Image 1 (cartoon, rainbow, N blue to C red):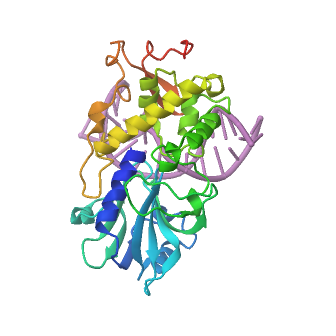
Image 2: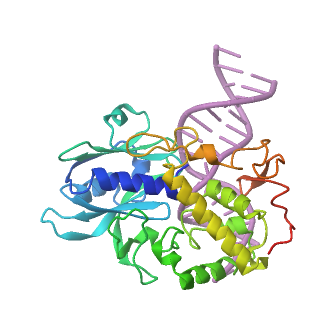
Image 3: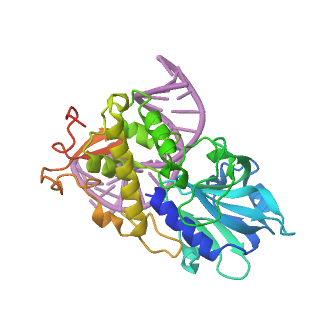
Length: 308
DNA sequence: GCCATGACCTGGCCGC
DNA sequence: TGCGGCCAGGTCATGG
């Protein structure tokens, strides 16, 4: 499933392959893939054709390509992409025959860009760029040009843990307070993209296991030091996944070249029900959580376990 | 404002 | 073999 490391891998691939190349055509094969475009496929085509991608930017699980007009002048909107659960952006011609091909962007001077999405939770849309509500640049972890503006659908989400701004102690402390503000379970808070973006079910479970915290522990009853440990663990696990090229389970996530990541080999608890905990050997447990699953070690992550 | 829940969607898998 | 049902989960809308 594409979470932050997977999206960052895709963003880096886009930066390498599509920047500076004009869009010569847009073909939407499935309207649902452009459902957030008010004017539908025709509007998307009108807003993209003749434009050039100038930067690939990311915040959390959202990725966007800034645009320049035919005259080379920057435009005040960008092509926003969310991969959903199974979206892929590919530059391989193999995508042409993929049964789940949803959108085809024809680009001058090289391979085209293909949006493939089996479960159709992902989407493409051209969105207005707005000043960031928190006053700073948009986050990215790959050295791409930092955007000073955010696409409108991204404006409400928080910074992600790979955002350089969150490396600053004051910003990190503010995030820590934000996490501890509500009564919700810590995993629910981690998954709340308005608190901190980019964490999905996989990395939430892995981070909580590393920190030794039960997923349902009320966030407002956790000490700052423990919340800091959870956030540090989430950042660490995502950075490691990024190095590995992301997590792949069933070929639903690949980079722009169609290659799978291999971080799934490093997962301690997610998808490991019945397997021994790498730390203590206790069998990993799966429990229903908000219409999905939580994987955890019942010994390392006790609900009422004394914490520091 | 905060929080929980359901809907959306498709294909693989399992049981009958 | 074929069918029906369950499951996966990110985001958003809705209602309490």
